[in-house]
Amino acid sequence: MEIKKPQIRYLNDLKKVLYDKKWAEKAENIELYYMYRGIKKKDGLRYDITVIPSKMLGKEFVKTKGHEHFGNFKEIYIVLEGKAIFLMQKRKEELVEDVYAVQAKKGDVVLIPSDYGHVTINPSKKSLALANWIAENCKSSYSFFEKKRGACYYALAQRTKNKEQRTEIKWVKNKNYKIVPKLRFEKPVKNVRMFKMFEMFKMLDK
Figure 1: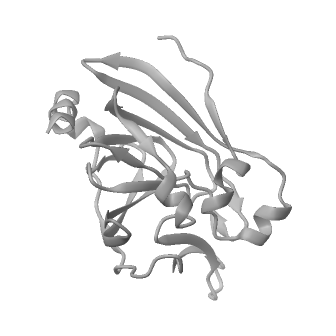
Figure 2: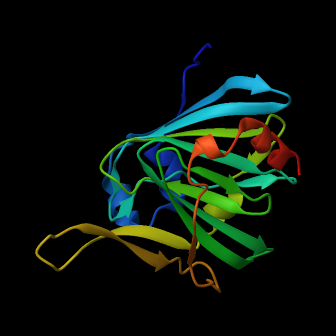
């Protein structure tokens, strides 16, 4: 299997979707994450890997830019290493009708519905590696997330006040959205071994 050079997302690529604008203005144009596209192709599907090293973007956990799919395309993610939060939102024109998050760890599988835009967040101190299957002819749009300066929620780091002083996630609504539904949490498929590849193909075709 030939591994191609990754497509790199830099800080400047994400400036329009970040919470901490003051930090972004002063920060260097660092590398944020790496996308290895088309590692494998089968039956009209494409297999990619994305690596997101642990970083803080000011007050915000490192994340992907966020995108929507043109057309009726689902996407399937498998967490290879680390921990991830998948934030998904469904909209009708400018208004978000639904938003939910899935917290996933190594071996978990997450399905992105066809009518949901999504952002992936690395909330841990370790690198996150993800694999995904998507239709080869699926095209992504970043324009709505850029226009709204991100998803309808930001995931910020917050220190606990107890003796352990752990870092927790504080979900902050994006003020560029007129209406932000209450964030709910859904569970991933527990383990990739429980989710055979032919089942992934069937779900993507629906």
